Length: 495
Image (cartoon, rainbow, N blue to C red; front, side, top):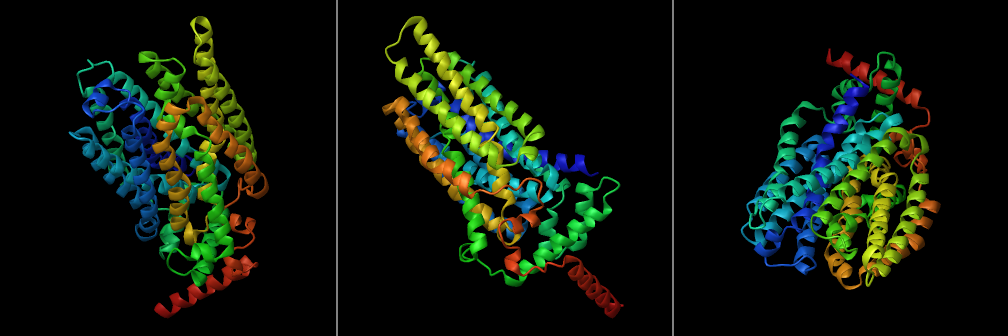
């Protein structure tokens, strides 16, 4: 099977990321529905709208932390299944909502599920990926998030064409979430568990079979065996020193460093302002003088541009240029685009006629630029880097912590305050992100982040200075022979 089976597994697992994108993007259209606003007696820039989005992010925060337990106990595959089931319940509640409380509970459950999926899908993909294409494999996470945004926008756009008195304009887009949930629940049974999790849970023979399914090309038996032996040796060494619980991640220096890198990668992604633009596009375009159908149409086009750039980047560029250079480029370029956006926003108020139209067009252009730049930098790399630098012993808990605190906690804050900030200080709101990128993001990435392209997950241990805390022997061949001899002796005794 090899390459194409690996790609197929990654694409299917990324259906969970599609849910992430769809659930995040659908509210942009839903809150623009006049029927929705009147039904729940609210306005576009009210704290209620902020609460609807922030409860989703808050639920995702706790869902991510839960993933640290389920991934170690039940595995990567079943964690994805659990996330899909929870999301199905949340989607049903939202679509049938008769009160604000039902919407909020449904959003919390959907967020809970997306939190589980956002930390488990990249780990599942990374542990199954060949090192030479791991950027592509895990980059599919961001690709499917983008596709989810696209589908949510156009489902919402089509649904908005009904009479303003019809609740179909917002109930159907919310109900559509059920479809990918059902696809995951039915399809995950046909895909294998991560080989590294299988070795960790003492199912080594099954792990070797899965490795062959994922990577065998007819000529690389030796490489697969070497990869299997290295996985097995690393896990055995880590098991010898690993303590139960979450505190071990903070007590061991090498692991603490890697946890910090993963958490910062997620936090810096949020500090680009991309989710503020994604969640509140309708407010941004209204501030630029773009209203009504034009507003929804521009949102739809905006959501298409990012995934196109992301696909080109993960397919042709990411595994060649690595992680650090695109992140540094993205920080600088997004900062410039946000400054330009703020300057244009300051000129729109009071402008009339063709000048206002020209400024609105320029404002849309720079928002599109942020999406394109993000899609060739932080978008895919945040998932790739955060998932590949974690050692196996804390990969579940570490990814849960990094995604919960770096991604979802920061997202929750911005989801709540952004509609108020955009309504009160409009274009000046962008300078918060500009200042952070200049003062924090760029110097941190430049001086601290490491290049990990085309290294195996076990080789990345060495990159961070310690492999299994130094307990893994340098002479892997000798250790391998000792293990094989021990296994043969055990077989002789049992016979």
